[in-house]
Image 1 (cartoon, rainbow, N blue to C red):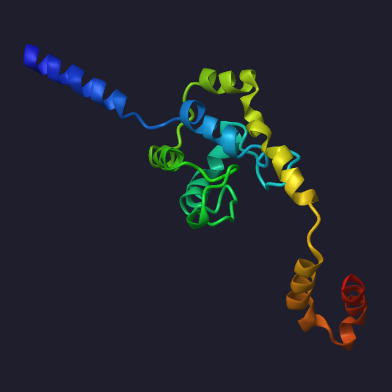
Image 2 (cartoon, rainbow, N blue to C red):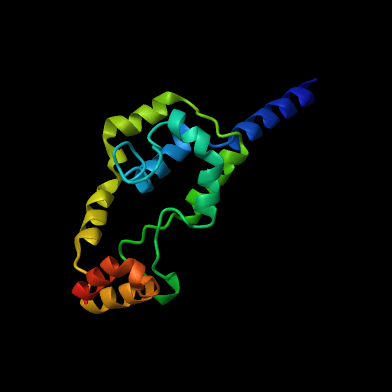
Length: 171
């Protein structure tokens, strides 16, 4: 009987050690650090990921996006050096999101979630400011010419003469 009890206690301890990640404890910190600068009401992303209720319907889509490294968007090629403001998720963060989805996308204890909100760490460490600085930079004239040549040239016909005038003014 004692062996059975010890075995049962060991199994219970092992199962709690390998418990599925929860939104409040494991996933929310990842989202707040990397995603909510854009994925919150009033920002450019199409859905909010601030809380479990709004993030849960997107769990499988979120997994697909982070595994394919489509999100968070980062277009620099890591084979050509290390970038100081690299926005890619760490492999451990991707594995956590995958395990969360595989485990049923559980919410967990809301106290863990509230502690992140109370500390104000959900502002994604200034990422919003970084994004604005990228979008406000002036694009070199040569890049504009290449962009418009490749995009607008097929449109230049008598039916789209107004667009042709715009393209000529930019050049």
